[in-house]
Image (cartoon, rainbow, N blue to C red):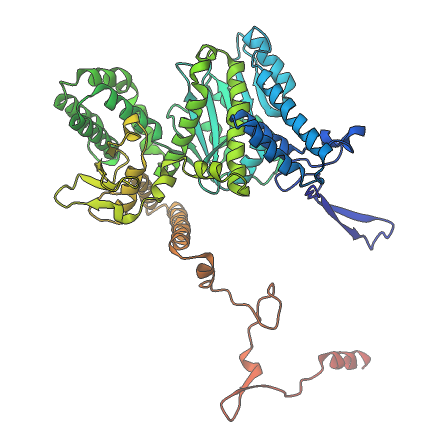
Length: 596
């Protein structure tokens, strides 16, 4: 009744009849979601009160906690909690009364809980680590020689990292709160079935050295391999060119990609903030995009930057900001863009969606005085933010909360762009540097997207004016992809550059050339399969074109044997007839030779 997946098989050892071999397919008493549902590890199923108290499993408890943290009214929380209880026991007055007391008590505990376990922040963190050892995969206290590092990952986050990270992408959201928090926050993200970003690990530290990065990455991978030794990721995405790449290559052994979401967002916010004229905003942001697009050309990108400074010499506020903040480290960004493949706009939108949600939770106006405490940040991450993502994924997969599911699906600009029909995008040949998108709420309103077909497009909607990647830009870029009058996006150009680098191996080095060609063909086959699946109407249409043929007489797991041409003879009426000529008995011949 509790959905336990524990089961095993028994095989008798014929060589030793007194022994049997027990093979556990699932040894733990967990349900399909990975939560403990009964047995000695389930605290709710221990003690004499377990028969009288309604069963509250980990899933129901986490669901109730998430609703309390999100501020749902108590009546709705109680109704949802009782629906979960009734799945395991019948409804009566006593059960309903105990369930109501449980919800009230849990809500009271959450409201009275505080992040300050001690007045000293460092001592408070030590106490939290001692109480939550299962949720801490790495902890290094601050000393004269070592920097402060704490790595947090709950059991649910571990499950999602194994589930969605295997043979998929793992992204890094770096340096959140550098100027506001006591220690910056580093988040590892995976992407679910809807390509929404899910936080699966939080690392709080100011250290970016290779030694400290290697330590917490090693502790994280060892924890994952202890659960699933076959777990591997397909690629690691970074958004900071200062990130150490050697620990990533050593611990994950995968390709590394680079995301432009951070540099695009920072440039756009400062262009809008420091330049008041809209036409100037468009021109400056377009010139910055050309600067990034020129990294693979023979021209020096810094020469184009000097020209931009001369053209907009009257925009002193922005020019001074760019020279003081970006020029000293622009070479590092350009080198990273040249050396690493670039990720897509869909992934950038997913990372930006997580960034906005984290920012809304962390920079709450009522908690601004607690930003310099690490225990407050840990409490915020493991309660409100964790509960929010848990409930979003649960609602999406179970369909229990339709409103939460709809809000979760529409939380990224990419998903919102998919709701815009193609006929809502209008291109005008007389204005090649702009495109118009009809508003879905008010059809009389049109949004103009400048510099279409580029990651550095600009829209004048309110969401884009806040520095975000809006749905109108993404939709226009989707429509520009098949059109030949627009240049490809940076991610495609970067991928094309990788293929050309593989192809341009010296001809005299035959082994390197053969290996490069093999890699190119393998990538081409994978891209063709993904494209075929994306453009087809369903998986049945794709599987119907597979060259595999099964025999009618044999089982599906046995391939048909080829018919020998010597065993088939043509019949006089044109049909095929088997050869029934008698064959010599080789076994009898062998016995006769032995007897002689």
